[in-house]
Length: 444
Ligand code: S3P
Image 1 (cartoon, helix red, strand yellow):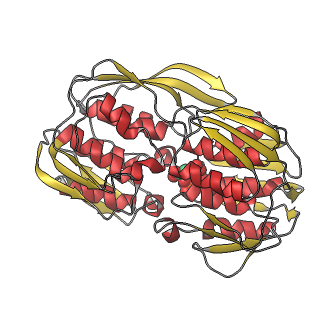
Image 2: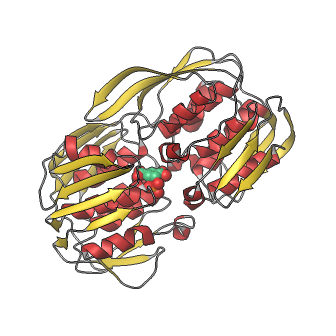
Image 3: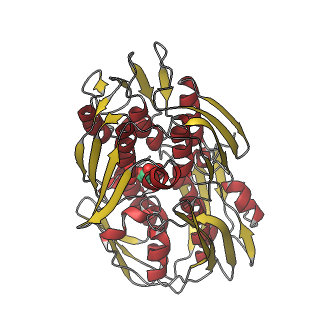
């Protein structure tokens, strides 16, 4: 197991390459959870085999669900809405995955014993209060008033339907409520700030659950009729735009390269990074777009281009790029002009404090930044930036995206970088280093 990776050479020419990244993390986790609640054998192809998805699979296996996985092929034997088995003293480990933890709490709604949910050092710091509050309204019981892991949970067989306003724009919170709504009597009505809509699309187009979706004054209105069992289903998981984004920025900031990234989920609630980089002058193209069970898939084409300008970002785009801000800050650091990003309090609630880390990395590179309130930043881009010092990235709570963004900075901007916890990319993107190798990246 590599502890530290050293990069002291920029990436060279890889002109006209085409790559496939790993399967989408959000869709892979949702597939495992929802197929477990279906009636029958479900099959997925291109399932992501990362730490976060493995923790979801292991948790469902402990709940009595038979799951077979071989490479990306995955078979789940769903047992219906009430088919999970709750043994005594059950402990489920979500490891590093916020999505697994928050969604699984809702899955446990009818256990008659306390089930303990735990996580790693990073996950233990994250707020679970945002899901505990609505789940209590559904009728779930929590052992104490903790809002962080470990948590103990149990609940009645049938839940009460609720009306709830979700004001964080959190897809995890929305999805946890939607899963609880499956076992609730009557109609659950949710009014949510926009966030990725994969759960809605699966409910509607794959599981065919009675659901109404509409948009009203900037909110998403979701109505779900509970207590409807659903049939087995198959799902082809497209590539993850969040993983593709590292290669989009690698290509953009390197010299004279172009890259095709194939079969990526380009759901409009996820492509903020493409919209934002294009507003900065990037000219990224979305090609051969297709509809797949309500999701959109496409190839993404990108050319090197350092002729970029700063952006004053409208916060409405924040949620559709929420996992990509470290990369966006990096680009803002080397483009012409000043960039401004606001209302990003959610960023400091991720696997690590990503707003603080984004600023810290730019400061290390001698890029001028200024905090705006507690949740924003102004970045003075330097298009002539050339790095020649030593940079050490450590103590970042093994946040996979901090690791990967640091490698992109090193491979495109120069300097000598020592980046710790060199295994943590496997949380979300196990093929990451293999793809870098195939493009000719050099590291030790
Ligand atoms: C996710 C939602 C987002 C995102 C995370 C995955 C999901 O989190 O950051 O990586 O699959 O629902 P929030 O719901 O907390 O915004």
